[in-house]
Amino acid sequence: MRNYRYRSYDRRHSAWKKVFGPKDFSACCISGDKSTIYATEVTGYIYKSLYPFTTWDPLTSAGIQSWKDIKCSLDGSVILAVSNSINVSTNSGDTWTESFKFKAWKQCDVTRDGSKMVAFTGSSTEKCFKSTNFGASFSASGISGMSPVAGCLSDDGAVIYAANGNGGIYKTINGGVGWGVLSTFPVNSWVVMDCNSTGQNVFAASSTASTLGYIYASADGGLDVNRFTDSPQHIRKGIACSYTGVEVITATNTNNPIEVQVSKNTGLDFSGVFSYQGSLSFNDVGCSEDFKVLVAVSSGTTQGFVFVKY
Image (cartoon, rainbow, N blue to C red; front, side, top):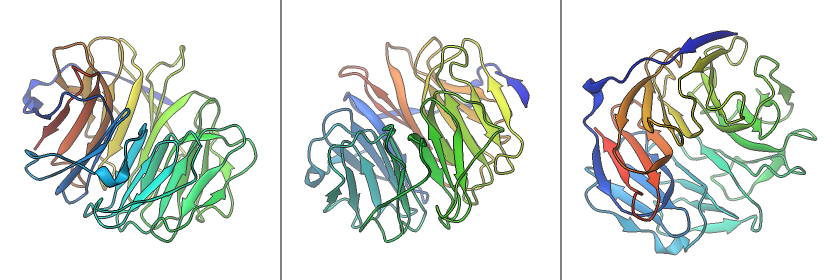
């Protein structure tokens, strides 16, 4: 496993705009076609905005919940949001279906056509939950002891990654029929993951005391893994990659500088592209398929904002 280091702040990428807030934001996503952004409150509503992201509306039909993550399809019409339940909309947030209540869901993912979904709870007795019918139903998939808190899936739904909150990273290449552990990734306290359309480029971030904020990246489905290390080390709450997986965005949650960081070489190294002056913490990031529009959300009732670069 090769180690890579942090590159200095790049001020050429500083055209970020504060477009909404203050609210206590927990998660965000942007449709692959750049048309729609969704942002969730720690406890509150899901908010929706259409390009150029000047007007934001609460999706009241989803209710007030303690939102943990949100993902959407290429055109933004299919949405998966997790709290203590799984919430799915197939009509751009007009109506919602709620299922699997009273579980501590952590992270989720959706294919670009919206037909396949995964959700992760992290409970010691749980596995990955997947849907192949636009969220109409979910079924458990995995092996004993998996307890995934994060993960992602390829566009065809065949490749799924699932990261244990205090263990290894698991992978299936047949839609969950069989699973195995990726020995190239160390046992760790994983917090977030993402992968590209094919599932070959995969990224995972950790948060243990000894590997605080390390980003692990693979361009071959986990056969060879590179570790990116910055200084000071950071806890990370979000990571997202482009359709090809060449570009990656992440954000730091602790230790100054608190900033958004970008890689344009499949996670080999990252440079700081945006740092906001204030006592905020970035909670999540997102990007369009072509990496032309980037979004980040921060938390705090007075320091929680949606930031966009396009």
